[in-house]
Image (cartoon, rainbow, N blue to C red; front, side, top):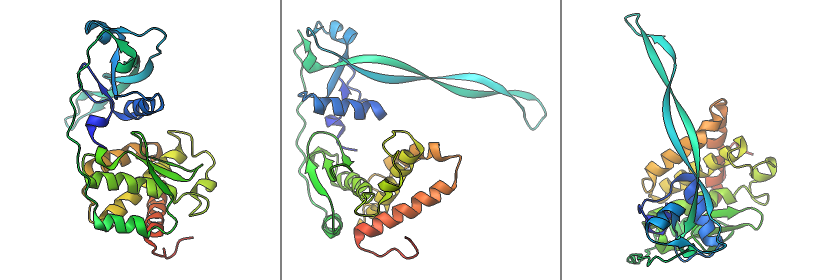
Length: 270
């Protein structure tokens, strides 16, 4: 999404946290006003010669161990039995501390060269053409749309790896904003939208990513975040596998949302 140098990392390994851990630690970094997004386990802090400061509380993160097991047997073309393996996901909970919570270590953080943002005219035209676009603010490290207060929050433009990535993420949040009751009203249809991982939440995330892909294509930046978009959509499709009609529903709603932003009347849609 945005520049990995600004995303939560483990200080000892310099590896970025992934998935929900990345989002969770970014929120923790922002809400607790830590100076950097670097974290360590208690053991790692000790190995560096440091200690966790008195009364400091750590943050829980989840890591998944994937193991194979014999699921059963099936017959191959020669009629011989062969083992069928399944995959088992086992969660492990770890506690990490931001380096601001650790003393006794002289932390060295490399300063990254600040990127210069260059506006893309076609993308700016889409944003300015969104007739009732909610207010867009730039605070912290998170990108999100708040339906309660009707505003979009984005990290600083220079924090993204490239200009196209900034617009791709912004388009995703803009599609979310069309769900507000004063626009297309998707949120008023589904009161349980806030349930992370729920069917309704998954549908809305799929709508937002598909709608963003439409806007990317319209702006000529359709390949800007292509691999990430595919992985993202694949993840949100999993809870909907039992109902293929939901993909059609999401595609229709995404197209409707993109057209709403572009000021194009959607034929045959309510």
